[in-house]
Image (cartoon, rainbow, N blue to C red; front, side, top):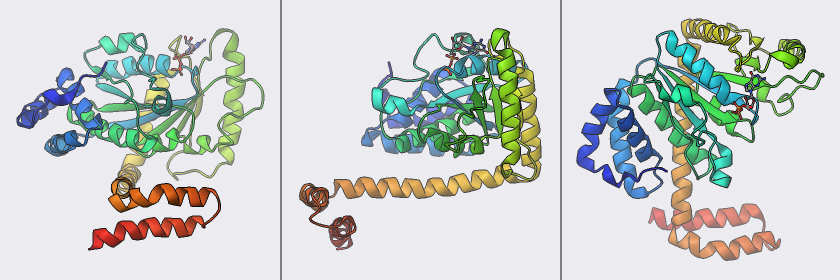
Length: 337
Ligand code: GDP
C-alpha cells in the first residue's frame, strides 16, 4: 500500500532532500511517492524536491529492460542486480507498467518478486506507479529516476512489460535498452513485426538451460541474422545477441560486460550525452503538451461545448477538424482575453 504524502509538508522538503542524498531508502520511497502523487496540491512540493536534488545526479547508467510476461524479467533483474552490486555498484529498479493503468495491478507489486535483491542494502526496488495514462506514468518514472540518481544509485533499471507502447516510453528515458526473449526454436521472430527489435541495444535469449538450451541457441542465431540486416542505430555499436539463463546464472556476467562496453563506446563518442539531450528536449514538449491538454480539458467553455461537439462528430454532422478548431477557439478565445 502506498502511503499518503500528506505527511511531507513543505518545510520538510529540505530534510527529505538531505536524507535522499544520504542514501536513506525510506526517504527515497517517500520522495518517489510525492512525485508520483496525482493530487495537484502535491505538485509544487514535488517540484521543489526535484529542484533541490537536480544538481546531485552523478553519472548513473540508465538501463531499460523489456520482454513479454513470463520471459523471466524479474528473475533476470534479481540475478543481474546482484551481480552488478558485487561489482561495486548500487542498483535501483523502477517499472513502467501499462497494464497497471488498466487493471490497477503492478508488475513489481508482487512482494515475492526480486525478494533477495530487495533485501540487499545496495538495492532499491520500487513497484510501478499505479493508474494514469502511459504518458503520466512515464513522467513520474523519469522523475523517480532522477531521485534514485540523487540517492547515489549508479545503475538504474527501468523494467517494462512488452506490451503496447511502453517500450518506446522506456527507451526514451534510458541510455541502453535490453530486450529479453524466450527460446522459440522455430524461425518465428518475436517483436520483429512490432519494431521492438529495432529499439534494442542488447538482445538476450533467456532460459538457455536444460531442455530449452538448444532452442535458445537456435533463437540466438536467428536473431543474429535478423539484427545483421537492420541498419545499426550507432556506428559505434553492433547489437549483441546472446543467450543467458537467469535461473542458472549463466551469461549474466557477460551482460554486465556488454553494458560497460556500451557505455564506453557510446560515452566516448558523445552519443549517450546526445541521446539524453534529445530525451530532455522531447520531455519539455511532452510536459508542455500534457499541461496544455489538461488546461484545455478543464476550461469552462470547452467543457460546455464538448458533449454536443463530440456527439456531432460521432454522428457525422460535423468534421473532426472543424470540431477540433471550435474547441481550440473556445479555449484560446477566452484565455487570450
Ligand atoms: P517475468 O514475468 O518476465 O518477470 O518473468 P519471471 O521472472 O516471473 O519468470 C517467469 C517464469 O519463468 C518463472 O517460473 C521463472 O522461474 C521462469 N524462468 C525465469 N528465468 C528462467 C531461466 O533462465 N530458465 C528457466 N528454465 N526458467 C526461467
